[in-house]
Length: 114
Image (tube, rainbow, N blue to C red):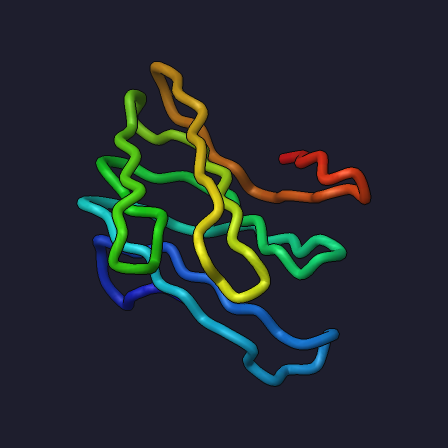
């Protein structure tokens, strides 16, 4: 999910058991470019997304605010949402140049790999 023209916003969708029935959809907004490239779902139904963003992005799709600002040109982020799409956490990996998270996996212990 993303808008058709810049600035793009992060979005994610969740489907039931590989069947293309939409279970939920969320859109996150930011001051500049924020994109989602990788998504994983753990055994409890929590969703994890990764990619990169620039500027400030609010990773909480509710009316609350969980904004993170970049330090580098593009920062990698990891965000977690519970089975109902509610915000759990978001972190970014800062650097002086460009970073991009392209894929994400979660193991049975809850360890996250990008």
